[in-house]
Image 1 (cartoon, rainbow, N blue to C red):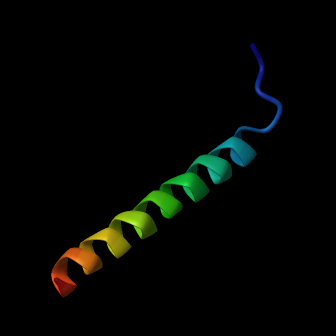
Image 2: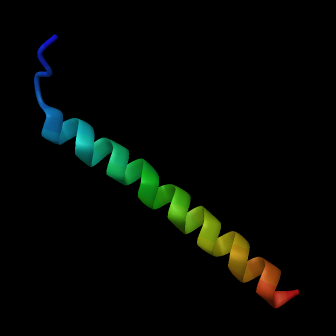
Length: 34
């Protein structure tokens, strides 16, 4: 099975990971504020 554009796939998964990191960062900040 040949991937058409593995670089695009990597970019997409990196974007999703960034969103997870941001979400965790906000969650941690919220815990610190309490």
